[in-house]
Length: 104
Image (tube, rainbow, N blue to C red; front, top):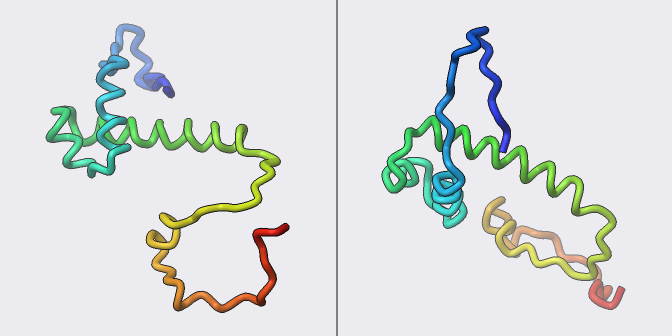
């Protein structure tokens, strides 16, 4: 995870750090679809702590995907979750020609 560097200029400034077990507990809750407030109630960490860890996770995941998901030879993609997330229903998508895209 990303470590924060104190900007206060105090050499004796010590920041509380989450253990790997605590981070895993928060990540598990968020990955299961729990909201930030629910994660706060379950884990008993502050909302700011959960939000900062979520932001750190987002940066790390974006970097990982940017480096790893290159030049993939995908023949078929399943985007079911994307359909519901962006409110695009099948009836609103224009019909494509009768070309069989799966045979490419």
